[in-house]
Image (tube, rainbow, N blue to C red; front, side, top):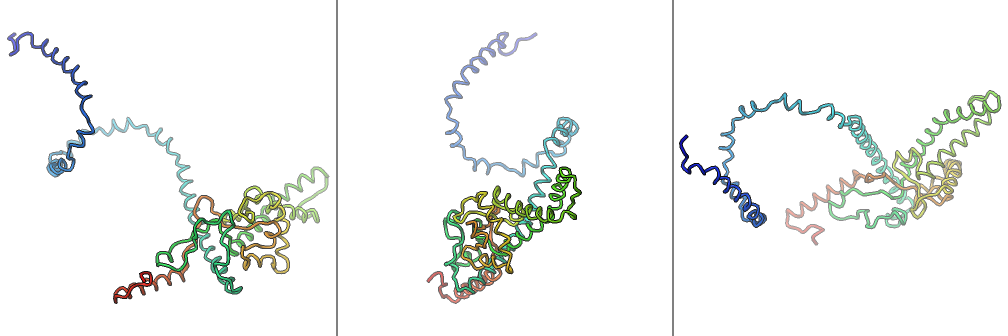
Length: 341
């Protein structure tokens, strides 16, 4: 066999050179400042030199697709494990909850608009300005005045955050109606279960229809429990939770069980004499009803983790539109806008 250009020692010499390079290369690479090297590279100039059209023309997409083995890729993918990781029930439940919350928030905002209309009318009847009426308890009062005064058009169209503010009469009335309906509806189960156990203990045939005075006592007890226990534990009844309301002490702190009990006991007296006990919830400065005064509590808006926003009324939208057109007309004729004076 003929010798190569470097003779028979060529393989040994290449091994020596390779070993030398292998020892020197790491030391050289450690001496290179990669950050400085990257800063010296002009990425924009490099990108400008690249002809992407020519590069795409050179790519044979058909040949590239032919190289892909779809079956091998499918075998690599463990579809069963992938579907196990995707909890479809949880995803569906989350989407359903978002839709329900959106619909609930829409109803709450419409109730807020009705509350604002009633409160504005009541303030006019008693000749009281908005500034004379507090918006929230001391501990829940906003750090900045979020009741937008007359100003720019953008300020007039800004939504107001009402979380922690005194609740209006329309929302409270709807919540009270819902709680009354819920308590009477669920009483059937509570009363039947209680009378069943009393029948076992006494031997008498007691049912809701034949219980007489005992059934009426059970109704009163169940109504008391409905309006007392949830408020004492969670600061709200079930219907109040749906309406976005909460019961707190007058200063905004959490309510205790004793105050919740007093509030539940006095609540029926607010309904007597044609609901005179609820007048304070309409014209009062803090929207306190008779049972709120007795328990030292107030009712505020509380939407949990979501922001409670009062929608801009139609009158405010029209007023802002008129102001915008007036400012535009004054700008066109060269007159300064009211905000620029």
